[in-house]
Image 1 (tube, helix red, strand yellow):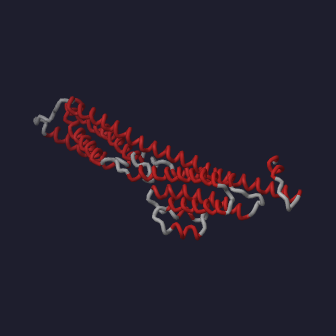
Image 2 (cartoon, rainbow, N blue to C red):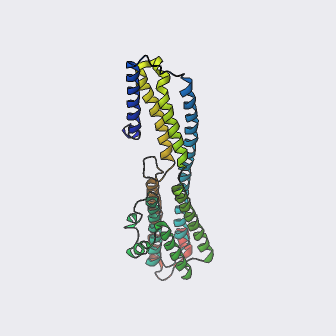
Image 3 (cartoon, rainbow, N blue to C red):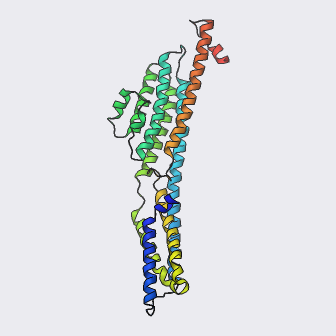
Amino acid sequence: MKYVLGKIKVEIVLVLAYTILFEIFHHYFINLPVDIPIAIPTMIGTIISLLLAFKSNQAYDRWWEARIVWGAVVNDSRTLIRQVLTFYKDPDFSVEASEFKENFAKRQIAWCYSLGQALRNKDAIKPLAGLMSEEEIKYIKNHQNVPNAILMLHARDLRNAKNEKRINMYQQVEIDNTLSRLCDEMGKCERIKNTIFPTTYSLYIRLTLCLFILLLPFGLTSVLSWFAIPLITAIAGAFFLIERMAIHLQDPFENRPTDTPVTTIANTIEKNIKQMLNEYQSEFDILKEFDLENDPKKVDSNAYFVL
């Protein structure tokens, strides 16, 4: 409640002060006619309700679209690492191949964290520490768009793997398609982030809401007298809360509690990818041990398949 009411505390204080001053004026100048039909503020309140409902729906659509995009990021990140782990040829169980897959997986984890930080206008390079090499971080610092630079490093390693015949042409195309989907999802997030909700729409709603609050005491004075103060304050607070809720939902990457939980989603991706990587390493150790026990110089692919 402290967080919620803190978002409209200024408006609540102003409404409370206005209603108290109005009742004081009406009490001491009771001979002055200040009453108006309650139907007038009621009509304005109905209009505001329709406008706020429309704005809330549009804001929620933006928030939900952002969540759908990040759901696709989760799926494509898993797909990317699965493709790299299974497509990359490693008949000799080389350390080089193991490092290639591990670095690729960690770089994808870094991409997820950096994308979330970039969308929130925070340092997108900070999450890369411990996940990428100093050489790669130095390369990324020369780019304004950090997530896009990380995808470039993905593409570079993919090209080198193709040249070294670790993957074939068809496998390269499949992995590149996954990278293209990740780039597309990054662009969708940036579109949501950079597309500003029409400010004139919000301004007109706020002006109409203020008019409604200014007229509401005139319609309730003869009915409630001093009891109109808490009632008007509560009604105004409800309208302001709905308006503020819509404002927060329309910008899902502003580092608020109502945002799309990009850091939590990135953490989930990290756990999934590391689990996939650990399972690969476990299989790597088992197969290598099996090979050394039977014939250190020969790799029996059929035996591996049985395992």
